[in-house]
Structures are given as structure tokens and as C-alpha cells.
Amino acid sequence: MIKMVKLETDEIDFKIACMLKKNARLSYKAIGEKVCLSASSVYERIKKMEEKEVIKNYGTDINWDKFGYAIHAFILLKEDKMLDQLPDFLMKRDEIFNCWMVSGEYDYMLEIYVANSNKLRDLFDYLYYKVGRTWTFLVMDDLFYSAAKDEGKPSSRIEPATFADE
Image (cartoon, rainbow, N blue to C red; front, side, top):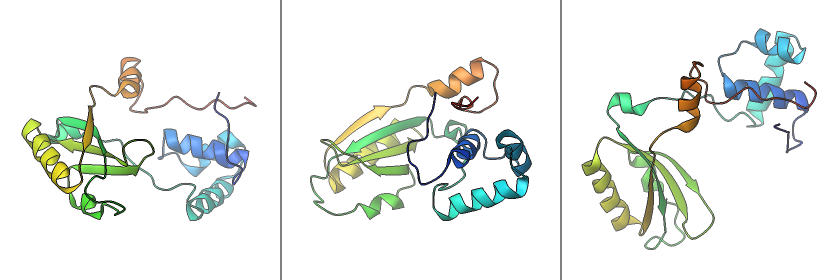
């Protein structure tokens, strides 16, 4: 069972956020029916969550392999050559889809998509020259998506949240 951790919002906001996480295309009316609110009340709550950056964005899960990006990987970077500098240059690389600052031995984690092993090697060379050490994890399969697909479910990646009062 999933439970709300942070109390900046209330239980209804949490339920709305969970529904939008599962399907960002739900109508205000459909959400309202699940949380016993009018569509206009749901709209107001969602607007407030957007303003407070509780809802940061609405996304689409894209299969980049269909566009020729056959390799999906996560790369840990150790800032050996750029001590205490935010690696803004990483945002300029098309292969890098996301970047997180992480704790532990490494400083950053990149999510990358490349077309082939030559492009991956080029990126490694670039990262080693600019930043330092790397540690790479190749993604073999998206297990949540594959499990949902095997069960004949739509492209939703997660099961609907169950709440304590249901």
C-alpha cells in the first residue's frame, strides 16, 4: 500500500497526483468521480499543485528505440577534472536525456540514449576527457512496462495506487 509521506498537501491531493502519475490524460471529471469532488474543484487543486511545483511536469513515455536509439544506459560520473563545477555542458549533449546529482562515490547519474556502440564509445571518450571516471549500466529491459504489456494492459507503467480508505 502506498502512503503519503510529505504533508505539504492533503490526502485528496495525493490521490489526484497518483492518478495523474498513472494517466496524465485523465479528465477533471474522471478524477473528481474517484475523489468525490467536482471537476472545477479538481482543476483548482491541480492548478495549486502545479504552482507549488508538487506537479513538476506532464510527460510521455517514449520508446526511443523506434527512433533509432537502440542503446539506453545510465552512467555514473565522478567529477575528477571539474571539481565543484556544475556540468552545464552536459545539457548541450543530445544523447543525455536526464542528469541527477547523487550521493556516494560518484557525483552525477546520467540517463542516455544512443544509436549504437560507436556513439556510446564517443560519448564515453567525451565524458572521460571532460569529467573523469564513469560507471555504466546498460538497460536490458523495462520490466514494469514489459509486465504490463504481457498482461494485455495499456502502456501504463504502474498499477493504480491503493489507498488506506479503499
